[in-house]
Image 1 (spheres, rainbow, N blue to C red):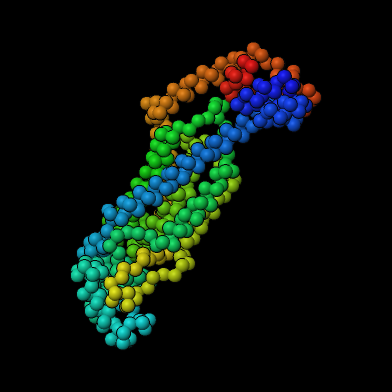
Image 2 (image 1 turned 90 degrees about the horizontal axis):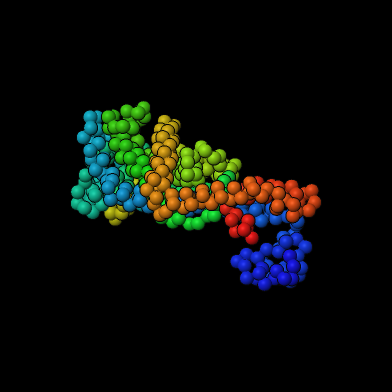
Length: 421
């Protein structure tokens, strides 16, 4: 606070001038306190550590969501072939499902009317697998198309894609709602660490990757169940879902599952223990709830224009984008229940991973925790012997109350340097 302190304030990493300090001390310091007492320093430390906790939660959540999305689509494209499922379903009892080819709106084709239908039938049977010269999923005889999947009116005439994918607009919606949920982390309830913080990137990415891996595994499992739903003996049918899924509903179910996993992962990423050990803030809960309801509504009633059978695209051997058909109530409830069960499994796996990281001292996580615990015990012992020195330096009733509050908070933090000075 005096002129003689100016050189030390200038040399210090963080020089702090107290309220009423000389102009020289103020000029040499990094921080200037405007009120009596030192508890504002504790407030700054607490706020800074809260910000750090939110940054860690953000990184874990962001990496986990990105890992889930990228790994899911990478595996789904190479490992899941809807046409093979469709061919297998055609061999089931009571199959294939036969539908008349839509011809009423085919004004763009050459000749129109019956001639357009005839042209489509020939091209469809000849082209089959979009230029491959085979027809292993959809065949048209006369004015009829046969499928292994149950198809809605909007899907009849469209070929089952060779690989699984979501419509581009669905991915855009997921990303937009995901970003809105991420922003809410800045307002989350966190517990400031009683010890100095540092980045432990190996442990951070291990946890984030593990959370994303569990979510991705559950999505791939549901994709297999959904593609197999035409079989009465498939898991999804044995669990109470009476109506099979059309291929467009399979796409809608996976859109809903991926969305729910993304929004709910925020509750697992924000704690090292079980998700219910610390309540989220109202803003975080509201953001996740709005995203959940919005994605559920979109899965029930998809508002964007749907792909329709087009003769010209068929003749040009163009594979259309994936169709998304609204889900029924039982499909939505099953997806919610499935995602909720796997969220609980995801949270348990996260807790077990933290225990393993601590047990094997990965990236020094246990060594650091034990060293910090020893520092904390030492500081508490020092504070126990000197309970009144800091409080006596603050003047005024309000300042003394702030000093006492700061002393209680300081007791939870490593203050060896401050106490020694």
